Amino acid sequence: MFAILVLAYAILQSFLGGAAAATPSPPTTLNITAIATNDQKESILQCWQLDAPFKASAAAGTTGAVFAQLGQLNMTSVGVIPPHFDGGLHTAPAMQ
Image 1: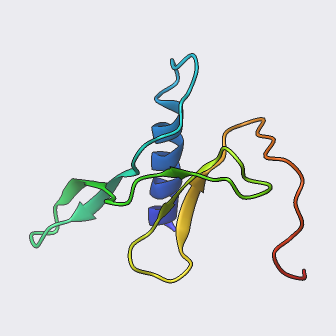
Image 2 (image 1 turned 180 degrees about the vertical axis):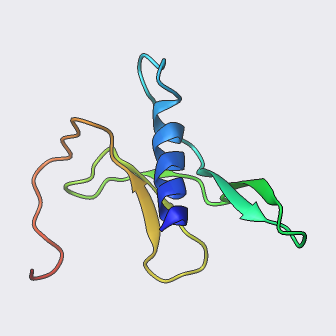
């Protein structure tokens, strides 16, 4: 659960560029900061950057949002959709 919150915060900070950003721009890569422990059970900070760059979507409903592939996993990605986003109308990809 903590890792998910750290990831969500990293995505938000990456997109907004901090609270003082006047016009946020989409991120180019995903930077992740995590609190971990070493062999001596001391807390350490780890800063990671994913190799996969964010790419702008052209798919209906998410046009203009950015997405990055998460490793060599099938159908796993992370997306950044800004506030007040209007990617257009679309239908659900599967029956709900």
